[in-house]
Length: 208
Image (cartoon, rainbow, N blue to C red):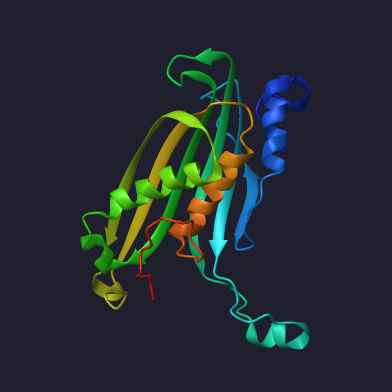
């Protein structure tokens, strides 16, 4: 796992944070990979991209795996996790570290009529951090519903609704492993994958 600024030039505190990210646990349905980190937001940064795919309902092995398992599993949710670090600290962040995240998932169009959809998405964030014990402060974010309707030659396509959550917060220490684990849980929650953390609401309608 690399970061902007060059590995040989990384401060020890940031290296400790990167080590914590490497140790983070995640579900098998979520794929994490390093992506280019933004270079203008902080002196040091690392970014991870996430994709959640629908798991096979059967424990397939051998030839049956190739015959029955879908070759292209359905993508349920995507996201980005960015860890920023400024050794001098930031008055805006109220700390030296800042986590910036993005999650997007597609639901059935009728979910767009739910006025509580945005607040439910924000609740997922708050409860995921609390469940994992990821201590933080200075949290902010926006939840957006995007309705897509098709016309003309595409009118046969069903309407869809996307939910997007953009959020950032300041971890209280450089131990950010729990923060990545909480965020990974949240991406899977957006994807509608059970089981969900205790007390977290679930959207019952997935796209068909």
